[in-house]
Image (spheres, rainbow, N blue to C red):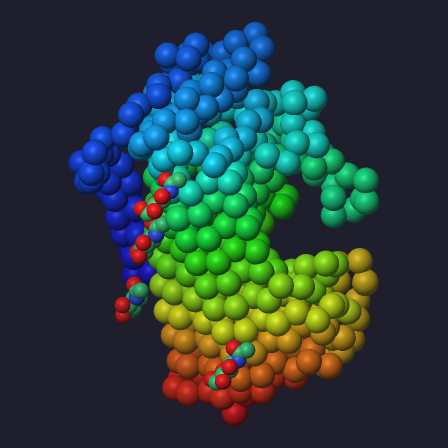
Length: 409
Ligand SMILES: *[C@@H]1O[C@H](CO)[C@@H](O)[C@H](O)[C@H]1NC(C)=O
Ligand SMILES: *[C@@H]1O[C@H](CO)[C@@H](O)[C@H](O)[C@H]1NC(C)=O
Ligand SMILES: *[C@@H]1O[C@H](CO)[C@@H](O)[C@H](O)[C@H]1NC(C)=O
Ligand SMILES: *[C@@H]1O[C@H](CO)[C@@H](O)[C@H](O)[C@H]1NC(C)=O
């Protein structure tokens, strides 16, 4: 039953991808087209791939200076391209139509210590779409990804970086084999991100799907994300974030955090995750904070109408995150992150671990106003028996079905 509906979601996704990925519904005057081929670019490859980025940048510059709607067109074909950032402000709305496949560099000299492969910056009214593929060719880079263990580690380039981009849309694209995260959103407002398919094999560490920080009014919808790390990660300063009809898995699920470390003290507020499906992920709905930590507020968060299939930690608040700290006594978190007004509503499916609901809130800042409404998570695994809840320092209420029960009464 459930695998049928998952297939339905996939099918629907592809139908939408193909039928909307055209200009049939475009409104207003047609844009002026700046085809990168007319600037010297061609599919295949150049002996020096920085040439190609320069051709793309020239097309961008002309489009950006045109006082009307501009479209930068990358036609079908395969292009090997080095790191490049398309910056504004531009004189009119820009669209960036990627029909081809872009290949990231595999030579370490061209990617180590770059934080961006394809960047968009200081823009208003940008649309990036086209049905094309961004191939980060991560296999060449994952072995350098040792930041979890070392202080002096290499930075790897994000496939698509949006910094200070406003009133814009990213849709109908595929991103594969990112070196680190697929998409990073920072300092941006009013973005709609939809109809994306992001994939990286499990061996790619820190290959988050979409990472959002210091941004407001961001919608992510109708996308499929399977990666080696978080499906979507919301970091400090994420406000009014909507995530709707996203299928995650494999990977680490949708996570708020990690919160509370260093200078990152902006609150996370107004997060709605709805109608999402998690397939075989390590976590489902998660909030993760450092312990000890700085003071940060995380408030007004809801996870609603969520389906979990074979998820290891379906509902998880971990306020004791400290990967370098070794094993600590459970229930002793010293996190100063204040978590309040969190709702879990209509969460159903299966947990691959006995503890389907795991809320380890802080000893010094207990979780306040946590609401559970209709929770139905069965344990499915070798031990058998019912699923369990493990909760510390949680205040809240529960209504409707509660399987497992016992977190709040
Ligand atoms: C973006 O769109 C808004 C609303 O249509 C318009 O007021 C503004 O001038 C546009 N900005 C650019 C750079 O196109
Ligand atoms: C994003 O989508 C919402 C609702 O679907 C719409 O109201 C809003 O105008 C869209 N924003 C942009 C920048 O396209
Ligand atoms: C989410 O799914 C529920 C139940 O299937 C449905 O009632 C609701 O309208 C959906 N919400 C959205 C935003 O699609
Ligand atoms: C939490 O919810 C309560 C009532 O539901 C509201 O008064 C309060 O402002 C909310 N707090 C935050 C920080 O969102």
